[in-house]
Amino acid sequence: MADASVGLGGVLHAYARLVGARIRSDWQYRTSFVLHTLSQAVVTALDLAVVLVIFDRVTALGGWSVGEVLVLYGFATASFGLADMFVSQVETVPEHILAGTFDRFLLRPLPIVLQLSAAEFALRRIGRVVPGVATLAVGLTAADVSWHLGSVLLAVVTLASGIAVFGSVFVLTCTVSFWIVGSREVANAFTYGGSFAQQYPLHIFHEWVRGIIGWLLPMAFAGYVGTIHLVGAANPLDLPRWLAFAAPLPVGVFALLASRAWARSVRNYQSTGS
Amino acid sequence: MTAAIVCRDLRKTFVVRQRVGRVRRRRVEVRAVDGVSFEVRPGEMVGYLGPNGAGKSTTIKMLTGILTPSGGEVRTVGLEPVRQRTTLARRIGVVFGQRTQLWWDLPLGDSFELLHHVYRTEPARHRRNLDELVERLDMGEFLATPVRQLSLGQRMRGELAASLLHDPEVVVLDEPTIGLDVVSKLAVREFLVGHNREHGTTVLLTTHDLDDVERLCPRMMIIDHGRVIYDGGVAAFKSEHGVERTVVVDLVDPGPPLEVPGARVTKVEGPRQWLVFDRRETSAAEVVRAVTSTVAIRDLSIEEPEIEALVRRVYLDQRDDV
Image (cartoon, rainbow over all chains, first blue to last red; front, top):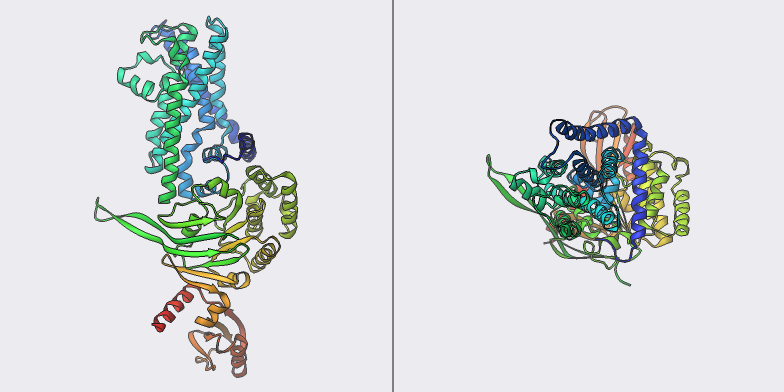
């Protein structure tokens, strides 16, 4: 828990310093950094290539044009990439517990998630963010969006909700791996698998898949709902426009749930020592 | 003045699952800390001794906020450690001798700079503390060296500085001299005594090196099987339980076990013989003099008793008292 007497500014300043330290450490192995970043970018671009190959055969996917799918892809990839960059580090908790290095986080006057995020920060993950943001920018420019306060707000809300949803999914799946060593693979099915699916219009999936990776884990708010109303894409599920703006509500609840589960896991560690 | 550390009937039970047969597992409760009570006054230096697995680390983890007690009460600088974790973190310093708190790939000085931001100490105070620590621990020469390239002794000095930079009221040192050479050990001890005298910092030190405790701590507690079996002065301990020491001599010519008043030979290995004596009855000097008056020796050394031997001694004496 954060200390009430400590300003948020101070905490963020310390975080930035810690991230800087990690980047400086990694910079000693810069060849590895460059290769990792490139491979990450290539993998991300390949996902994009798959989308484009599909559109080489069809003119619409679930009633969506290639431009519309690109915007969706951009939202999903950019927000997942940012969550991956700043939050996915929580996945390393089991390793820290096994190595005994988790205790050090409990001895420092900073929130544990923030310390983990900084300690395991990997700048190479930017290799996923850059293609995502670029695609989003290109997609939004190409699409016929009438830019006004409402649409700007919608784009911002969608991106922010996406980061929050994917970040929360990382935290939530990590709390499972607190207890079950080696469950990371299962967790990955939800984090990476779930985000991959968000690159396609949600309504093309079977109902129960939609239920799990669209609404139960509210990833539909990471791009799908927002894209529909931002670019006016086909809306076979009849999702209202207000729903896109209301995204912070379900996403906030989900994030709260994730943070509760996290706090519980830490308490559990403190009472069992494992 | 309130106590720096208070433990009352502190307990920690771990549940361990043991395999019984192929699939079945049995839950076994392990009482790592089993009703520990003590109080440490501000400015005290206390040694916390015990064999491996006695419950030392578990106690420390409870009073620093890493582990929640299963029972009893613990207060460190008046705070409830787990609940007030971040507030407590600013007021205590912790060194785990076996695990670093420094940034491995960066110059040592960078770690201090980072800790300055993590603890958000005022710049002027940070500067002053850092200058003092660098001078006292003689770290000037290797401040620019990456931590991973430091010798163990240098790194341990860095660890101590890292735990003291934010002016903690209490420092907990878990095996701070483990693996150090004699010179580094002396430097660390000398520094700790000086720091405690000048700043009044409370020090709780776990070790299984009795020598550490003798040089540093007027008071020691011995823990075994999760219970404190001795709490008192180091000098008092010696006069109460006696402490056996051993003189190891290498004779020029191998011979039969030596006959020395006040000492008995417990082991002979070629020219080397182990003579155990009680320090209440004689001294190492007496024993050595008696040996050299009868035979020629090539080399000699004096061994301190292992902590396990002390624990055994306490139990034996307790049984005799009954």
